[in-house]
Length: 83
Picture: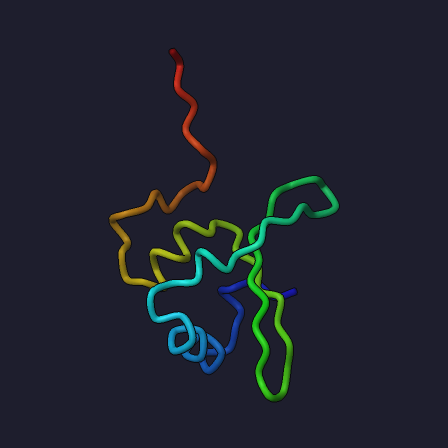
């Protein structure tokens, strides 16, 4: 498992070509050993197989798509309504 930030630039470019409209529909939510939710994407190249983890997946998808202002980049936790 590798963090999106640590992916080689060549793999990031492959993701942009493979998912020109974003990969959010291909993410899978799993839990880690601390029972925290992690969003991951499986990607294979000729040389390697990657399980890419997204710690703050909304911000990273926004970065991927170039839509920085559309997402809160500090947290991916849902907001709580106090009603």
